Length: 334
Image (cartoon, rainbow, N blue to C red; front, side, top):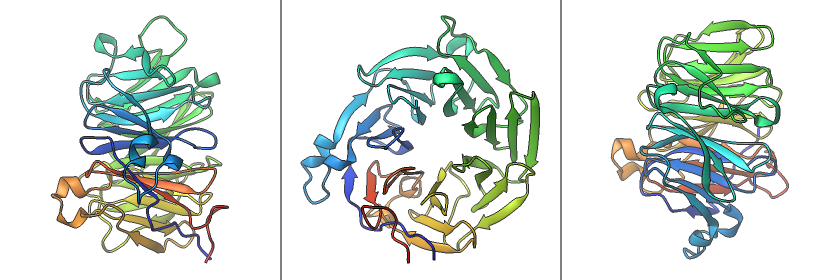
């Protein structure tokens, strides 16, 4: 029996004036939801305060907007484990470290010492989330020490031959996905690099809870589950209408790593059973997606709580759809 996600939206969270590129829940219980958009804003929501039938509650669900830092679109957001800070990267080639409570930037990493292309992905690492890792269109991965006074990177990896579109951190290992079709695993403790040739441009990499496998999205309308230890293809995920050939679309896991979830260029959200590879759901959460221009109907980001029963999607219509799981205690099994 496979898990299923709820298909009825609990809330539509407004507040952006353009397509949404980044979406993530806060750490721990995941009470809050952060979104980054082409309007250069980052919004913090409390979805529990929103009720879809009452549009006035959408405004109360918006806790804070973080503005004035990014000069171009926000493409990636990551939250520290203590929920006191988050990091963002975007089209202005800069990485910003934010204080959640004051809505102010603590540090900016960019300029002469920074990336020479847009920042596609960011993540925290190191003890106490003291290091920021960023990947860029300039094909480099850079490391920033948040405790240091200098804004120079403490390390730069430049093995990629094209844009580093996505990355994820698991202890002393960093996994990156590049448009050059390579999944690279950097073992910082051993000083080793392992390269898996996927053969298609990679737009998203996500680790399992145990960090033993990696979910990889590619521009051939396919998701793949890769064994991190040996690079073996464990399963692939497709659907006749699932489309990802042009845009950067993020995929993720749900239901304790039993489901793979991804948005699509056709305006849908798709789920697959991790083991069988069967497409279990096709959902149309963004109303009017079929009537929007191609670039606007793309569902570019999905996020799922690691604890609790909620998931969210966002895309080119500038709205977030936040959904509970089928039952409050967890995901209903069929």
